[in-house]
Image 1 (tube, rainbow, N blue to C red):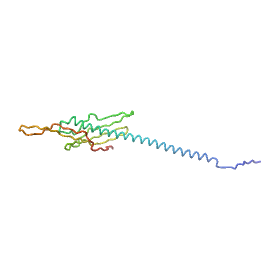
Image 2 (image 1 turned 30 degrees about the vertical axis):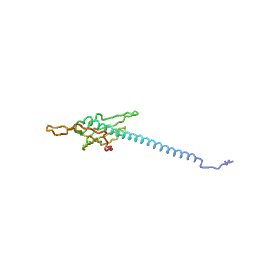
Image 3 (image 1 turned 135 degrees about the vertical axis):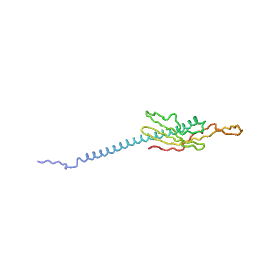
Image 4 (image 1 turned 90 degrees about the horizontal axis):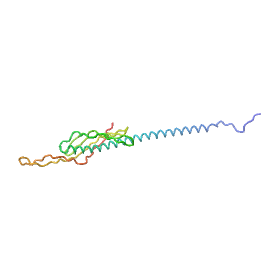
Length: 182
C-alpha cells in the first residue's frame, strides 16, 4: 500500500534563502562603499584643514614680516640715506602650540628689490607649517619715506640744505603676494 501525500511536490522551496543572502550581500557592499567614501572624505577634510592652516600661517608671516621691515627701517635707518640690500630679522621662526599640535611660520630675511624716489621695496618669503602641510608665500612690501633736510649757511653766506634724517611713513604696504610652492 502506497501512501501519497496530498501536497504536491515542489522544487522551489530554497529560493527565499538564496534571495535573502543575495540582498544581505548587496546591503553589505553598499555599507562598505559608504564607509570607505566617508573615511576618504574625512582624510580629505583633515588635509584641507591643515593646508588652509598652513596658508593662514604663511599669510600671517607676511604680515609680521611687513611690520618687522617697517620697524627695522625706522629704528636702524632713520639717520641714513642708505637703504640696505638685506634686512636681518631679529627672529625668523614663530612656533604656536594649538591643541597639542605645533604650527608656525618661518621668515627669510627680506631683500631690497628697489628704491624709487621716496619708496623702497623688499622681497619677503614666508613659509607656513601645519604638519604635514606647508605653504610658501612670496610677497613684495613697500615702505614710503620722506627725507628731512635742514638749512645751513656755508662760509660764503650761501644757503645749503643738508640731510638731517629720514621719516618712514606708517604703515608699510603689501604690493604683491603669490604662492611659491613647488
